[in-house]
Image 1 (spheres, rainbow, N blue to C red):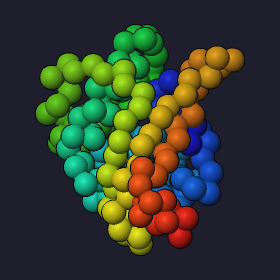
Image 2 (image 1 turned 135 degrees about the vertical axis):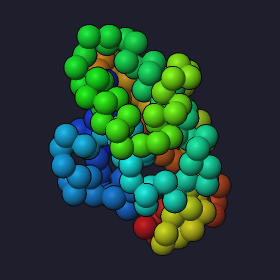
Image 3 (image 1 turned 180 degrees about the horizontal axis):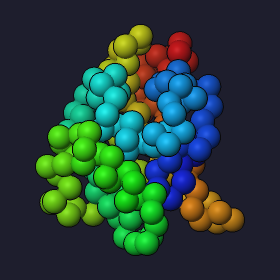
Image 4 (image 1 turned 180 degrees about the vertical axis):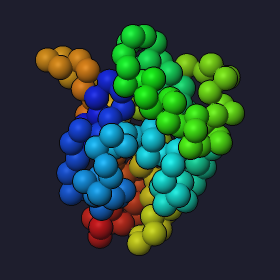
Length: 149
């Protein structure tokens, strides 16, 4: 999937639809990875450790916001989540920052079960406000399950 500087989901492919959902079903103003992770129960259930992943995402979001301190979109996302997400509201005041662009995630997919995936975010040199995020299986079982999707 492709994210902009404020974590809005601007493009996705069939693999992202199979793993997550078809983001076209989300209203454009809410089509944002941070909003999705903090407000969508289905994705929350898919994370083996939702809290750790959500805290990391929040710290990454804060780090992105620090690069664009006057960007209104960050304020809109923050205000929405302060109203709609109890965890976001309580963790926001912790002021954690993280610019990590790769790592591992474990998902419990409702169709194929446990998936161990590595993710990497690549920043575009031509369009530095865009990031391509890829997910790759880390073991043979996850590879077979991803191919099934």
